[in-house]
Image (cartoon, rainbow, N blue to C red):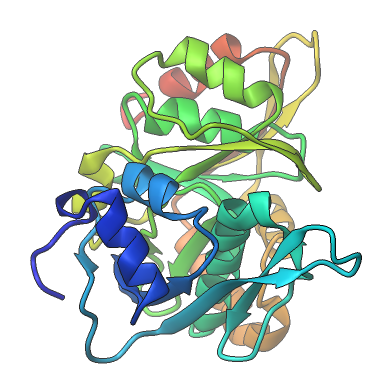
Length: 307
């Protein structure tokens, strides 16, 4: 792509591109061409993707050609929006106001689908001192809130959703994108990082209220710098709980990671072996906690080369 950034384009220029031949975006090693007639995307794209390479007159190859277009709802009283990647979509049509979350969910799906040559773990992942900290967790575990608090302060964001591990060298391939925050997490991060730039919450999604935090510019600029895995932490938020942690063997951590791996069925024994090698030098833990301050203190103390 040319050297243009999203921040070089006005909101109206982004809207014209979306309605015309499309807006080209480069996120790490992936190129996305996005078209949309929803009027819902130009504002969040300009805020959240301002540091990403962009192209308003796109040309060449794109990994993903995505359309998000309006259609009448089944009741013909309101507009819906549909996600389409060259005729494919795992999502039903959603209310028009949900267009931006639908784009983010859809792009996650595209990246996971197109990363078949790598191990793709449903996990947040950040980096400090040249080592990745992998944070797998089920919904409600607090991993996205923890990821945001770390990535917006002293750690580098690699991804808030997908840990992509190369089967060649075991390094995590960064795909830094906007950080998804849900419900109470939105106000928690606003309070903890007052300088964070967040979108206005989209309400009444199937996940509740959702807002997105802009990735730090430093993370975007380093999006082509992979790192080895140094730590694997399985966080579990329990309201009111005192922090408690348990070291895990690498075998235990590997078993849990495989449960969170999207493409484990496709990779088979080769993928299992590659992931085992990737965490061969990692320190692994399960942590239960009841508030953000305690888990941040624990992570910053424990996940350190000198600890």
